[in-house]
Image (tube, rainbow, N blue to C red):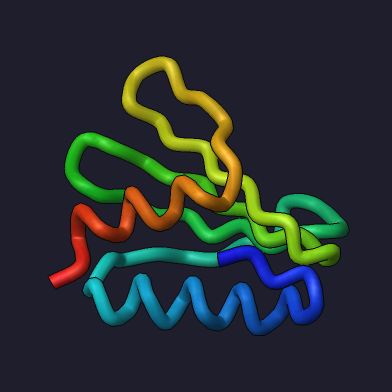
Length: 82
């Protein structure tokens, strides 16, 4: 899902997938070089940061929380895609 050539398109693609899966989300700016997409699903909270260079980081909170790279989005969305 990472798109280093067009980080804005990577963000739009992520938002489109969340909307398609009917997963509620919000965006905020917490850093100068990234947009954070916050997602809350049953039993979890996801913080997905899309950076200006196209890098994507995902932190999933299930108790302890761990930072994963952008490839984690595929697994997370697969669980909610219809």
